[in-house]
Image (cartoon, rainbow, N blue to C red):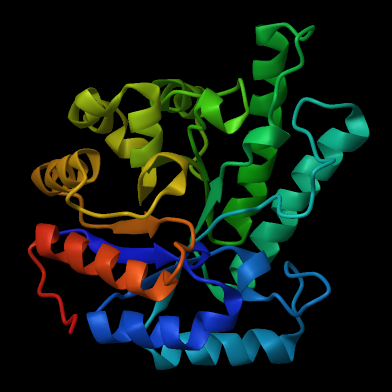
Length: 282
């Protein structure tokens, strides 16, 4: 059975304490984090003070949670561009390098590289040139991640999210194979499968990329509230169970109005029921 986690983008920062208490109540063991939401009071959320970091670690550990992944790596870095001019490309890499440093401080093993608008290939750039640039950048970043004990998980971002590079899960799979780096992996995203029309082939895609997958996002298109009753989510949970996936599966959903924590409770309870684990929801 997979291990269930959830991303902190599912609640606003001022509801962190009740959210963590809810996760502990329901028996969730993993927490994925967006630094901008984890350290909202810090001038630079990727470089929190040691006091704030220790207090946050203590709070998370007190609720029986483990940091399992990081996302939103290019928060507040709109001028960073993988395929931009040299300075913009440097900012793209430096921003991820700073996220790697924070991951090491948190003891966090996985960083999801999404950032669709930061990886748009210009119309006049040949595809071969873009691929060479991306391979060079991610191999170098993979070296940095490996020295800090973590991995970069490249995420397929559908065209609906505003990018034209590595849209399909199959494209990310092939890119990661070509990168051939132990610290460059694939984030298997269920919402992306749905938007890309790949959901019906989820089992075959997962099998073909199993050795490259470091993390799974249990999501719906446009980060709508997750519920296992949704066909793609329920099918994905069954597929992962049949495939024998025993690592983390992270619920990824935006804070749902009007009551984010009620939506979190429903998402967790419905997923746990499909995963064959007891839910402690009241």
